[in-house]
Amino acid sequence: MTPLRHRVEHVDTDASGVVHFSRYASLLETAALEELERRGTGLGALGGQGLDLRVRELRIRYRAAARFQDWLRLVASVEHVGPASLKLGVQVYREGQEPEPVLLASGSLDMAVVNRESGDPACIPPTLSASLVPSPSP
Image 1 (cartoon, one colour):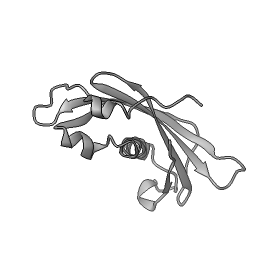
Image 2 (cartoon, rainbow, N blue to C red; image 1 turned 180 degrees about the vertical axis):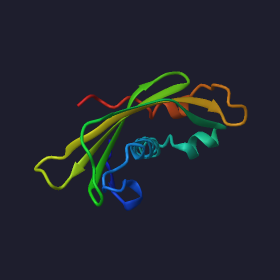
Image 3 (cartoon, helix red, strand yellow; image 1 turned 45 degrees about the horizontal axis):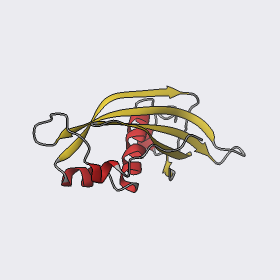
Image 4 (tube, rainbow, N blue to C red; image 1 turned 30 degrees about the horizontal axis):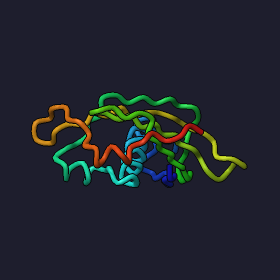
């Protein structure tokens, strides 16, 4: 669970300088894929096995707004690994203004592992699943 930092850019915001709700889906996906890369099971490793990921479900809970030029901390963790699926949780925090980071949003991505060519469900090879042990609960 190595946090990823992201500075809110103009493109992330609406006319009032608040991060548009739709941008959180992209932030969650970026953090989840970076966590898989960190574990050696990212898209490149999966592609080398003829596999790919498809999002089956995305859930986001919003708590507070991020604004233009805020620094965000994205924390992803593996929550569940099935034979042909994985679920990653992501928390989005604002850094800087308060003594502790403020939780802005949290969510999860439930992903199916598929054969890259056919799109059919495929099992995660043992060579990759060994590094997908769910993260310990805080």
